[in-house]
Image (cartoon, rainbow, N blue to C red; front, side):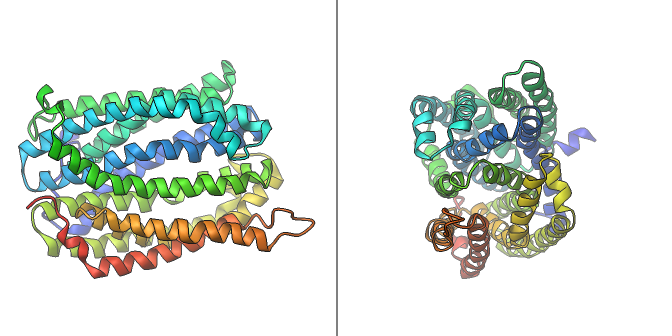
Length: 458
């Protein structure tokens, strides 16, 4: 039974909705576990150290996300290539793709550590990070950068495994790592008293373990591809394809993370209480987004395998059925937030003022999750087909041309003597607007159908 669950899944036959749902469910559970990394960080920091430490972690996270965009791009390119070559039953190309991804990731980790580590504190100063939290932010970021290989390889290797149609193995490894992370969080912060840095160290150790487990899994999948040293040697056309497919996906995340950093500069001006509230909102938001991201990734694999096999009618049918599943899940989550929002906020802090502020701001975002279900699902189809540029263009339009001007515009227009920076709701209103317009643009581009000509398998 366990062998069947962890075997690669051929998604080119059977009912599309069933294949998508079976693939998605372990991913949702796995993504919940991954969210627990950051959520447990926040709970432990908030309960054992205080609200300022909670704000320090929150201010560091947009920068951590920015650091990871390079590896998110490699992972996206790898997953698309793996799913299409798997669907086309091309063993040689599949072997070269997996080996080259491992090598490219190693080079990227070395370069990133050399470039980013010296810039951490200057960037925090540039972002107007309050003096009360800047040391905690710097500690968290330095440990995350030094341990970036664990964060990187888990994302890339689990992306490869999912591209092969196996979402269950990645779930098991992530659950193991999550338990380790929770235990180490408590030990490092509550007992060793390492502060915010202990939280980052716990996460790095846990993800190193999960990445090693993924590597062992791949080494045992010789039935589907060859896992030999010669395939680690960079081959120009595979490296170029990884970059070609991954760069737009990484750029999409980079655009989003850059906007978060720019908006974080505005967020920091509203003070420690609002920064802490924003952290709480991001934690709940992370869970609310899980079905959207999970269905989006599932549809990427589904589309990749079927495009590789030349089954475009099946891709279109799966897109409709997957979209319905994603929208249904998001609607249910929106209802839960509206009804139980205050209880959710209370998990992270005992400060009533912070709970009330977080809940009030979260209500602004609630209905936007349904719009994100549309964006993630149809973007997943386009990426799986090999079109990673269109989602990047949509992200560029909504994030740079819409979100940042709206956030700063509302802030400026609502300034008063009592509110010298303006109304803090500008952050959430700008994000909701971005989500809704993004969904509309995604539907338009998907209907245009240019993604159908982007396959790497000829």
